[in-house]
Length: 330
Image (cartoon, rainbow, N blue to C red; front, side, top):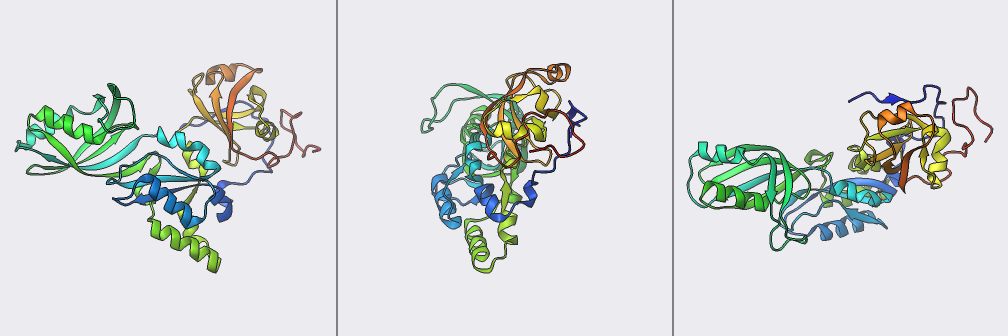
C-alpha cells in the first residue's frame, strides 16, 4: 500500500472519532455490509428481502444482481450504506464457471483459444438482459482454466463489472468452431468481498436471533462489515478534525481542511473523505489533482456529493485550520 502524502504535518490529533471496529452491532446494522452466499434458485431481490426480514432492517439494498440460478457472493448494504450501492455495482468481480462444449476439441486448442479472451473483449448483451443491446468493451483481467474433462471446462474469471459470462461462453464456443454454453456459475468475489466472507441466509437469521435473545454478539458481528469496506477501492483524503463537521453540514472539502491524501488522484475522480480514525465522512469528486493540491494553499480540494456521517459526531471547529496543542474552545 502506497504511503499517503502529508499536506499539513501540523494537523491536530483526532480526539473525537470512533474506529469502525469499535462500533456496536446495532451501529453496524445501521450502516453495514453483509456478504450473503446467495443460493441457486431465488432472485437477488428475493434473497435481499429474506435478509431484510432476518435482521429486521428498515433500509436494505444489494450490490450486483445475480441471475436466479447463479450462486455466490451478493453484497447486502444496510441503512446509510445503501447510498454506496453504486460503488459495489461498479467494482470488479470474480467467478468460477462450468462450460460445456458442443463437440470434442483437443485440450491444447481449448487452452489456446481461451487465452485469447483475456484483456479487452467486445460483448453484445444477451437478448433477455435489462440493458440496451449495443456492443461494449469489458476487461477480463484473468482467465484461468481449472479443469478440462472431455467437453466440460471449469475456469476462473476475474473481470470488470457488467461482463456477461454466459455470452463469454458462447463466444469461446464460436471461436473453437464447436459451440458452447454456460452450465453453472458462481460468483466468488465482488469488489473486496470474497467467498470466504459470505454467510448463508439461515446463519444470518440464527445469529440475529442469538444476539437478540442472549445478548451475545460475536457471531453476528463477524458477519457485518462497516460501510467503509465499500470505499476501499476509492482514492482517499484524510480530513482534519477541524473540518469534519463542516463537511457533515454540506460544505465542500477545502485545501485548508486536508491532512493527508493518496498520491496520483486525478481531477474529477471519485474519492472518499475519511477521518484519521478511518471513519467515512463523505464521497465526492476531486477538484484538483494530488500534485496541484500539494502545491496549492487555497481553494476547493473535493466537491462533496454524498455525506454519510451525521452532523454533531465531531464538534464544530470550523474556524480552526491548523494544529493546536490544546483542545479548542468548542
